[in-house]
Length: 289
Ligand code: KIV
Image 1 (cartoon, helix red, strand yellow):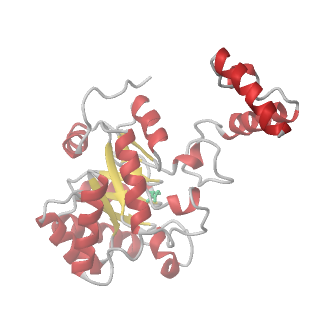
Image 2: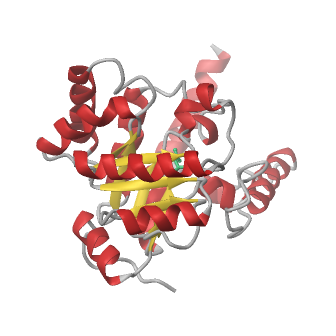
Image 3: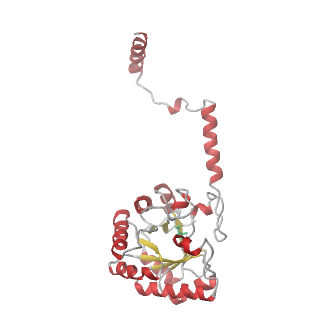
């Protein structure tokens, strides 16, 4: 069983893993309590993904989630797992439109949440933002391949790099992002040949999400792996079923309330005996008045 980290896992550790060939496990996380459990389990890196829009808020896409919400939950994950590398997703609309606004919003995320790195979905139009943020010293991860915020133009959540041209475009964009100062890449839903080519083309860490074994680390939506999602993509390992025990606990609670087993004496507060006796006399007088 992996041990909890003795020291903070940071970007330098991710870079060292890239060099040594050690693989890095990353999970998505959206709250303080789960972050604490993940740190305890030895998960070195946590992604506060905008998939929170789906698995926390119940939206069909990641598009509706707001910057204040992402900042709030990233700060909660930071407090729960101070020793983990915490990467925050910049939500749709928070870094597009103007360079100034993008820089301002990324700085807000970094200052208010305490995250170690931010992630933006990569497009040619984001290269100036990447350069500006790298110059400012922000660790930015460029998300390529399947970009859920681009679902409109992609026309659905299909794996990317299906044709030689498309695959070549992902490799070329990875290199441009690296040249613009990206601290790392996240490659989602691409065939293993594509991720292998990207890993060979750049020297920065490459995290895969359904991108095959060549990547330096791996991530997926935690809910999909522990039985909390109704269905999950094929690349997600089934790590357990927490939904079953949760449903059992909740229905046991309903039964205890209905059968009056709850609350029992051990769940009640106790008044000092003298106060209780006086109160009972007093309440009798009040009621009979
Ligand atoms: O939002 C998210 O959880 C992600 C991962 C699926 C990579 O971006």
